[in-house]
Length: 309
Image: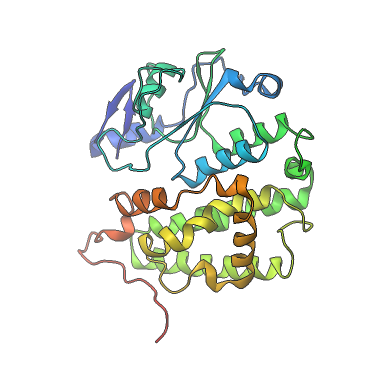
């Protein structure tokens, strides 16, 4: 386990401190309690914010997709895909970034809150006016982009998301069963957990494939946040999750409607520009963070499901 304790980065947090760390790992931003992303300023002065995002991370990918599709002139620092080093997320030096001397994401967190304790994750949205990180939640950042630019783009339907209860429910379902579902497999620590998560994901994909049917998009046959949420998982599945998470019994392309949906989105140059398959392979294969590739306490490995002979 890696993270920060009282503003100091620890490449390894020892077991005896893990419980204390877990209790304190909600990001205590430096702004006053109750402050949030200034939607009006984001709409009229997006350059007063700065986004730190790793293209390799599917949750950060959500924010990069929204930024691209809404054509938001918001500066961004793109982070290296390799997360296996002692300093965690890192990036090239950038004198135009708000924390100009930083080359590691933990340094940005420390600049925002010198007493921060917790994990260091992407994305992170820096507010230049407040001189601090204002959010590290991908959903909150994505929603702020959608709210700030509702009606200001060629496809205003993407910003309709949470106004319709059915769409809001579908978005929540995709996050729980698809976006998080693959990670429940990757972080499985025993055969039972793996088997259960594997079956849950396979059923969820079959259900979503049937729901899509002959439609081009997932909701009202118009592009929406549901498509934006599904895409990062879809585009990573066959090139990364299939092998790295030992989901060997099926591929995304085995679900014909979902594969067609993925190909439709990839035909959009704005969406395609956010894709980096090479980053996905580095991020998921060159890291020992995923427990599925380690032996359990009894010394035995998880035996993955595979295709039938």
